Length: 370
Image 1: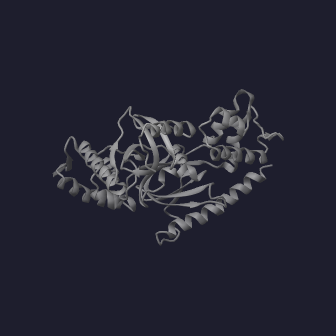
Image 2: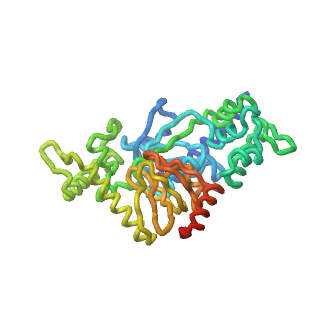
Image 3: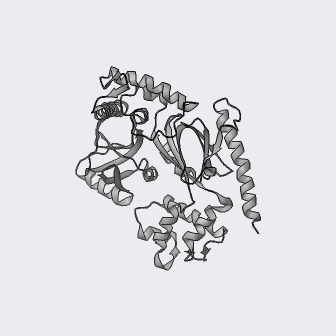
């Protein structure tokens, strides 16, 4: 009766072993069974902090499951499976060796599933035409992504499609999708970026770093062991302390290193100045960082990694505005966006209505540089 689940587990085990070997080979290392651990096999709620080794595809679908390798501060090498490559958007553009935290959770609905439920409504009926009518700002390529998702679920017997192109969802749609995602006892990995810079960069970085937070008590150190990557962290902090001392942000005493009270504010100020100079140098535009409550409009041109968060670079009228980046923004790359900064988030929209708004500005003589 459980033949399908057994075959899925066997396939996962084979793919995972191969992906783990490829991750270790990136660092010219062979298999290390005594140190290697699978996060999903650890006790519930366990999380790991460490250095990002790499990401490897599992199976044949480049958009599907991937394996993340992390050298933990506990001296072990950990792997964790993520269900879809889109869940790793936060890692795009970060350096190898960036600091991440990983944990596992039970399978859940995809963002596309939640949109499908929203569009289907009480009638539990989804179609591309209905999606387009309810959310006119969504582009055709984005809508087709949801259609492909439903086509896959139709093949799995979760939904039914009628000849008129309408997908009919059962009342148990969320539960059936979760069961499908969790076949074979699969858990799902969640990856959080803590610092986009490797230790070598953090040692000399003129800005806040994960090393600072760890050494000065703002990060959990319960897992730290002075072996493997944990020993690398200890050695890196000794050098980082010299950098902070040279910047006038602390001093050594008999208890170790003592930072000045406002060292974090000073480091953030240094980083902001560096980021603005970089944008102005690379793009030839006047750069500024959007403040809470600001309305930002323009072309979402790129993403910029800072130590504690990422920024979306939005271009308009010869200026470059840095607004808080969100993973959902990736689908609007190189398109016109409009939104308001809300604390550390950016409530944005894009699509036809935004284009119309910018066209009005053009008619008033305000040029938009593409």
